[in-house]
Image (cartoon, rainbow, N blue to C red; front, side, top):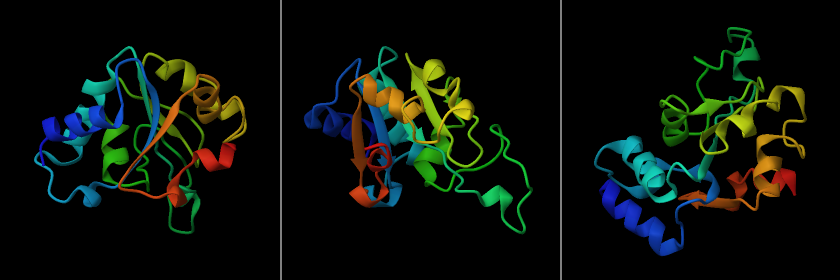
Length: 157
């Protein structure tokens, strides 16, 4: 599968420029993807455009604070446990990552800074969290090869 094929599929689903979306994903669900996680991300960026917003969980679920963990969360280094696509996404230029130590969000696009700026000062999944702000802005949830079991939006609901 190529990035262009993924892009066409996203457009057939109804994704378009200016959308605000929260993405949960599984790279292995695609089968073989030419270019790997980067191809999936580039397809999302192309469809939504810089006028839109893409959010992904970049949670570590407290791994840094486990018995053999480093004991700190470093937003520039701490990996996510949300899979290869999300772990690649938060490391890309122009992506903002919130400072919540266990459940940070990674966000790119028009609302990225606004969504992540105060996450460390509010409830993890509260009304003023990145997810809460996305919900208020009539954002959408997109699951790419994942089930509702992984959908973060259920915590906000």
